[in-house]
Amino acid sequence: MVATTIFATAFAPDGEYLVAATHDGVVACWALKYTLSSDWWTNENTRDVTCPTPAFSFQAHNCAVYSVIFAGSEDNPILVTGGDDEIRCWKWLDMVSAFGVQTQGLLTAHTFSLNLKPSLVLQPTDFLASRGITAPAAETNGLAVSADGTQLFSASGDSRAYMFDLSGGRGTCTAAFEGHTDMLHCIAKRPKTEQIVTGSEDGSVRIWDIRSHECTTVLNPSTGQYGGAKDPISASPAGWIGCVAVDEGDNWLACGSAARCLSVFHLSSVTLTAAMPLTAPPSAVLFFEDKILSAGAEPRICHWKRDGSFISSTPVTSPCLYSIAVNPKNRVLVSAGVGSQLDVFINHTTRSFSFQL
Image 1: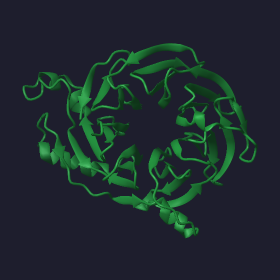
Image 2: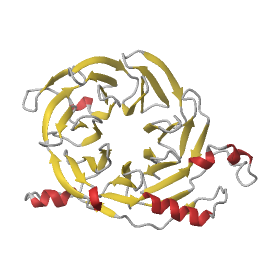
Image 3: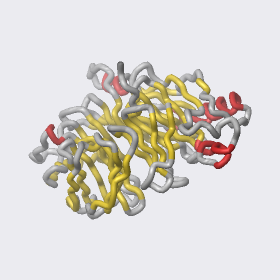
Image 4: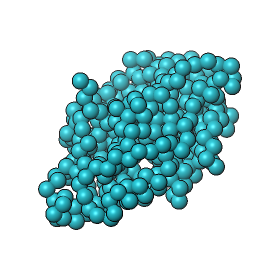
C-alpha cells in the first residue's frame, strides 16, 4: 500500500486558497478565507472539525503530480500541474466558481469533488519532435513562472528544462535548455533577470539565459566551484540538488544537496557565502523576509539567517517533507510531505493546526 504523499503546494494569487498535489494525481484545495476565520471554529457545522478537509478536489492526472504553480494574470489566474505524464493548465476562476455553486455560500466541512477538464495540455515531446528528437514523456519535477505570468518553465526528468509561452492561451513550447547529464529536480526563475536556475541529479546547479537558451554559469554547491558551460566543473551525483530558490531582490541563490548541505550564493559575484550542514537531505527551500527556510527528510523546518547562522527549527507532523510555502498575503506557512496532513503555522514557530486530506 502506497502511503499518502503530498509533493507540492501553492497559494492562489489572492491568498484565499491553498492547493496541494498528491501521489495519486488528485489536487486538493482549501478555502483559507473560511478555515482561517473565527467563524470556522465557532460555526455549528464546522467547529468540531479540528483538521479541516479540502473545500474541493479534482483528479488532475492519472499519475503522481510532482509540481504545482499559478501562472497567468491576476484577473485570469491559471493553475498549472506537472505530473508523471504531461503538464496541464486549469482555469482557476472556473474552479472557484464551480465550488461556489456547490456550496451556495454556506460554511461546510464537506469536500466537493469537481469534474474538470484542463484548458491546455503542454507536451515538451512535441517540441523535441520538431527537432527530430524522439523521446518518451518524462515527469515534471518542478515549475517556475515569469513575473508577468506569461512564461512557464519546467524541470524535467529527461535532463532538460523547457520554456512555454502561455500568452493568449497558446501553451507553445518555445525552448529546451540542454546541458545537465541527469534528471532535473528543481527550477527557479530569477525575478529581475532574464535567467532561470536549475538543479539536477548530476550534482550541479546551472544558470541559463532564457533569450539565448544557453547556460551561462555552472555551480558546484558542495565546493563553491563555478565556471562557464564548457568549463570542467566537477560535480558528484552523490550530491544531487534537491531544491533551489532565489530571493525577491534577485541577489541570493539557495540550493540544497543530498550531501546534506544548504548552500547560499551571492549571484552577481557568483560567490559561495554560506554552507549550512544539515542532518538530512533537503527537498524544499525558500526565502522569507530576511531568513531562509529549509525542509527535507526529517520532521522539522529549519530557519536560517542569510549568513548561514542557524536560528531555530519547527517540529512538523510529517516524517519527511517535500514542500513548504508561505502565503504572501498573510504570512501563513504550510508544510507537507509523507502523510495526509498539511501543517499550518500562523507564527512560523508553533503548529497552529493541520489540514487533512
